[in-house]
Image (tube, rainbow, N blue to C red; front, side, top):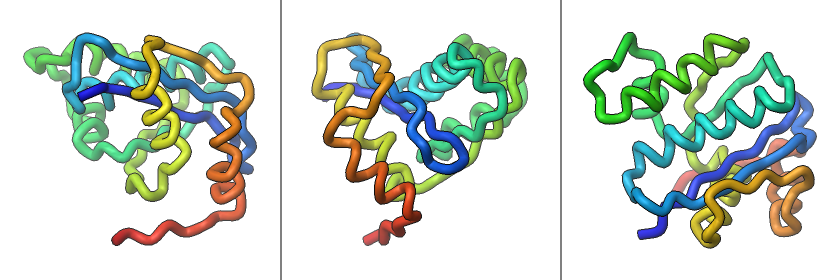
Length: 145
C-alpha cells in the first residue's frame, strides 16, 4: 500500500493560498501518515507567516492524540510533540471534519500517493483541484453514503 499525504491552506474566504503533497516511502501506518500531514501543513503555514489557523483533519484519533497531555511512551511521541510545539507557537485550533468535508485535502493526499516525491509545495493549485476549490468556495454539501 502506498502512503501519501497532502493538504491545502485556504483563507477564511476559501481563497487558495498553498498546498502540499508527498509520499512516505518507509511506512504505510495510517496514524503516522495523518500525523505527518498535520505536521507538514502546520510547517507550511508557519513558513507562510500564518499565525491564526484552523487545522481540519478527518482523523479523530490524531486530534485526540494532539489534545491529550504528554504522550512520552507513544510510538510517535516525538512527532506528536513536534506538532504540539507548532500548535503552541501559533494560534492554531485543531478540528475534526468528515472526509467528505475535506475533499481538497483528500485530493492532495491521493496526489501524494501517486508520486514518488517526499514533499512538494504548490504555490498555485494543481489543475485538477480547481473544480473542488470551486465547490468549497460555494459551500457545496457532500452527502455521506
